[in-house]
Length: 181
Image (tube, rainbow, N blue to C red; front, top):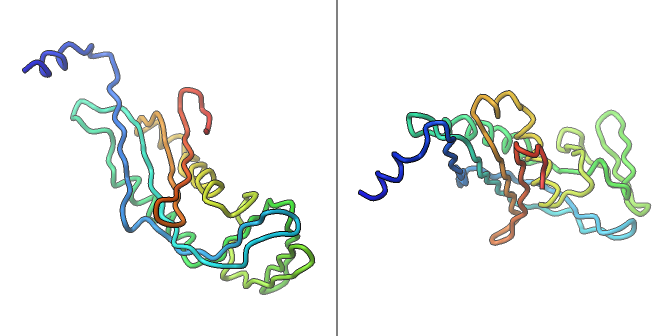
């Protein structure tokens, strides 16, 4: 009873916001990568099952709905498929020299050449293939379509990336400041 009085007291011009969390089991992809620690130190090439999740804050419409969740579920599923079963290489790392020939990328670190099949490798514009960089990179991919964000009345967007249980990196965008933190 008291809640209904409060809700009817909210001015009609006031935008009510809600945050929708999409964290489905199917939002994952398998990658090979190595973390670069310095010009002379890196991990061995190894694999991870990367999980992603998002929190999306938007306006609640007159029908009590923030937006059609299926829109971002479809986008997230496609994003996972895009990177699944690839070796990810940090194209912007100052510690790697990358060249290519017909079939291979040649990735050099500390004088050691690693030939990688082009068909199995994606060069990402990141400094390192870490969950921190992936959270930032994937967030930028997800907010690139500003028209969609405006159409769905999205105010904030957060990505979460995990390379294992209980270990996540988060990155968030805010419409008001148009900044990523």
